[in-house]
Image (cartoon, rainbow, N blue to C red; front, side, top):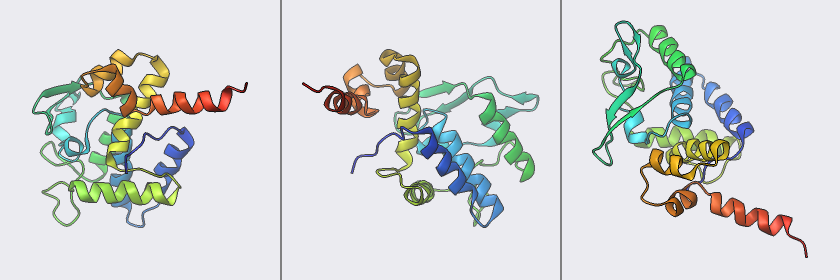
Length: 191
């Protein structure tokens, strides 16, 4: 099974709502924020789950860039988080008393540690299935962000750079644009 980007804002909103419906408030908030950050950044889940509050905020407020070393590539990466994500992380950290050395996506069983990739996958997969999104996993979040950047800008070179891909063809296949274009050709061309 290949994961696909979520191409519908309504489906994204439905997943947000589903994640917020968890019976334990801290888990509802954490899981919602996990998806919110994932869907609004190019980060892989292995990098997201290890984020600490101090990587987003310094003593004076939000940092200009989120800097990290990618687990998969070992490369240093710096990204600019949008204001909405920064505000969401601030509210979450304040509400649950998280300090600069605390993981944002902490484990409830062991708050000194972060959740693992398997739990992150279960959280996202369960919510997606409940709202009818197929072929969804944690990597879907990264693909979705890239898909919407492409749809807005039509700049494959930008998306390729964001994803650190070696070719535009790889990028187009990764975000499902080639399939979208083929589907549209079949639907729109009537001879």
